[in-house]
Length: 460
View 1: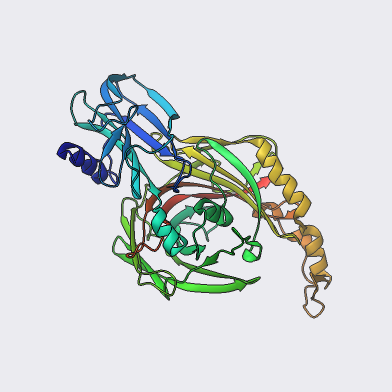
View 2: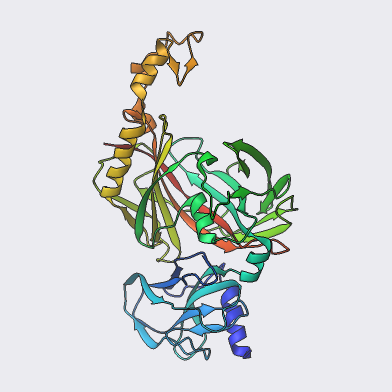
């Protein structure tokens, strides 16, 4: 390999945690897929730009970095480090939104399994003096390993969300699970069974789903299952450590295996590298994953200090402390209807981290309609409780609730209106790093760290 190409790839990789920005100049890149399967669709690539200073001449580099460090530059995927836009002047006060640049028919070169990066850099013209750089990873699946060992998907998370209630305030939560099949199958189908498809950048999707695992469907006639990675996992960073115990429950014939734990305020620290570690168990071998926590997201609209009233059918505007369009912010509006059908009504959105986004009113109206059709009538439920009735066959006649006054409970303060289905808005900034076990047990694995805010919402 050409030494200069290798050095550039290494330099870009070293700057992923603390990318430079000079005189208000910045660049962001985006990839619409976390992983690419053999023979599957390749990702769409997008770029954003920012200049808060005077007009600045730059070379714009945009392309892909392969697992072996080779840099392929757009638009002809050359390996000679030829910039896409040489001596290009960034206008003063530039706000270039995330824009799709390339839809690939295939990855350049001989596609290698492993971690790839979509990358962009702004340099002084004719030099490798970096003014700004951004990278985002995705995984190319190893077809041979997937065929031999089955399909395994791993998810590790660390998140901290502030909110209107004390229980949410600066509380860090860590979790992990490993999900898969003992045979080769489409990874995208497997992930969709568990968490659904992600919306495209700058868009929102609506869906409804069951609240438990008893309805997990089969893939190619096989029922997905969750795998044991040991009795405990550990998460450490910033001089602190957190133990995540294993929790196993059987729900309708499906055994759910999760790891989770909560940490006190102060565990989450921006800029700290966190290390997830497991010694391995019956289904998943030893692993170590690392990722660096992003700066806290501060939501300003709506403010997370009180219940927010939102007219159903009207657009909901979101505002936060943006990051020059670099990185992704995810927003969701969720309601769990606690009636006999027990459905989740969910809007998922993905925005470039430029400080604003909009959840369409048409989707919000669908959430309200779903809640009204499926949620429990809370006023009627409270009335039944106070008169010693029963809920779903549970006899409450021996429970003294005669002093319960349904009219004394302020439902709106809980974000509940009419039906037993609280509506929660969450807005979070995310960093994602691929990982695998020491033995390469996973078809794909991701460690995500999030910071954001939660708001109770009343839909009018």
